[in-house]
Length: 377
Image (cartoon, rainbow, N blue to C red; front, side, top):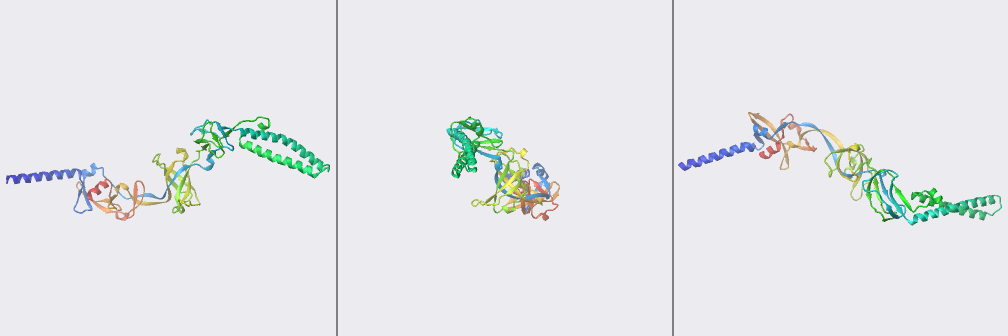
């Protein structure tokens, strides 16, 4: 009998110890699986908080990806009209250049030959023009034959065409034809920047030979940047000019920027089945973007207000969703009922409730619900 009392006392001691431990760390669940009971001390220590359904604005969006880009007129590909050897290339990637600034210098004996040919044709043209005028006068006075007149006319006009062609070529090579006519022949030519901007590509070094098909460098003017977004065929009919866009640069930051649909493409890529959408930024001055950056964007096609709850108030159990509604409070004890909800559209912090009539004016646990849901499951 003595040993029996010792065993019973030990069991009572263990039971009391477990009960005390549960009061400190575990949320109690009643016999009804949908009822959860907690104490005032637990409510306070876990920083739990009540809330109610509240109206929130939800956007219906089309999720897209794309890149930061500039209009075609803000990008310049630098190449040579004639091949040559690079003798001077003072610029590096990232350098800022002004419109008309020298970018590179090229050298080629062919440049000299073109100037020599132009100079020779220029001298011949003076003689041919004088001969043409003389033959025309003689022909008008019936002194010379029509054959001689037509021969002089043909020679003059043929050389004039050659002269004009060479002159145009010199201008394209940035060589002043007037200087050549004065006998100043250059062995090098300069390539100038057609726009103001920044050097984004440099594909050369001193001494290298470049042909007309080679890209020497690229200049980009970032004063006006925009978004080029890829929208799938199934979504494009919902995209309209003027729609708001929220986008971010995921590799750089989580900050949300705003833009607006400016143009939607009118053709679909046969392979990818996407359409390009062009968007303008709302405030370019606050955006320190680099052309080519990858963006993730939401095109807002519609906005609607709905009764909603914070996402923290939602408990997911076996692919069903619940909230905890206060049934009553007695003394220092809270009694919650776990009630099923139907979810609608979501934002980063709120979710629309599709059956709000079941919870109007109810006190709902919006902070700490996840822990209670787990304990009451």
